[in-house]
Image 1: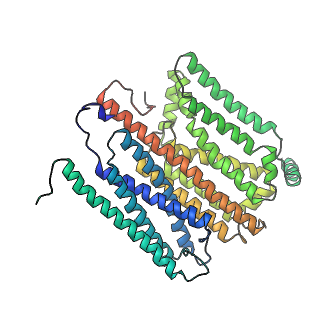
Image 2: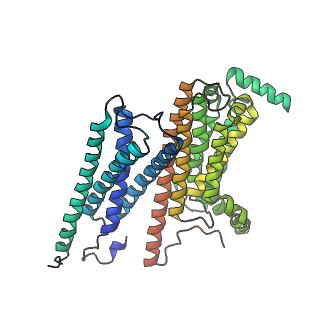
Image 3: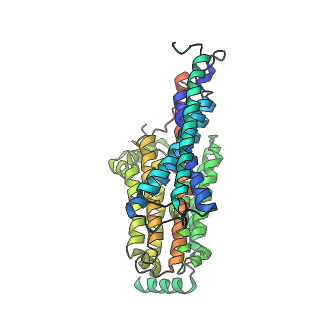
Length: 165
Length: 285
């Protein structure tokens, strides 16, 4: 809507907001993948693990509720940015990868190991699964940092400013 | 009264059908729908548009309410916690959200003559309404009701007594409506806190709901106290509660954020052209 004023000038892309929006969607999507793929389809995780304490269940409930709100907020903000032609697509992708990786690591380290809410898979030695889980999280984070870095230099070139040498 | 209650209890326990059969649910829904449509018709005659989506939302809510307390659904609740849970999800969450999104208060205010509007605005601006309609108060009332129901013998009492059974439904409907209005209602809510605070209360309330569902699942053998249901059935009811709550949270979050975005866009448009009407429906004259 604000775009109507100067149609000839390219509008400023809102990189920081695009990154945050991508990160919100990334966290929420990873949580949804965890819920749908590992809980519902593979049945590796359980809805509830006997070892879980009440405080862990409470934190689990709050996180789950926050993920749902994040997913909706992320998509609404994305629609707003797109509608105003202010979406910096690469910043949003970087945010998506960073958010997904951060959630995967949080789930792998805090939920599985510190709070012991549940394990990746039951009836097997969880070590290999834990390593795979957390390495996947790190890989996503690294990819996000990579895209953000390339994007930073790319944005500088596009706006005619060179990184100061 | 006692005799009546006992007779009703008896019929409830035996056949599973609620008192009054279809008459009461149909009457309630018909009254609400007709009143609402009368308001919409009045606006139409004055050539003032009223969004069809709001009408559809309110009418759907009233119809689902009638179904939720109708004999077939009441029959499902006879001794089965899964039936109870479905009924509770409908009456306490989906019906209130649908009705709130129909903006009945805005409709009433738009239909009333200016003299009457002032009286209603005074009520809306009163301190007690501010406190009651604050998201934290509304969330606490709704959540406390659930915890008391499932963690105390109240649930067992409600399955034995028709009066308590319906009192619980009335509480669910009103507390659910109050909460949905305080979080995402398009109706005027003076001094309502901003979007981040409302999103925060939504997360905490939905988290408390999810926690209670997992608690019921984890202690299916003991909870609700004295109910004596099959633990398997309690666990399935708890999962219905957990995932059913997600759907309600998703709907409320969508209404909250899209409403927030629409207001922001209108405000932005207003800054550019001051002729655009203000985004907030103001009750102050």
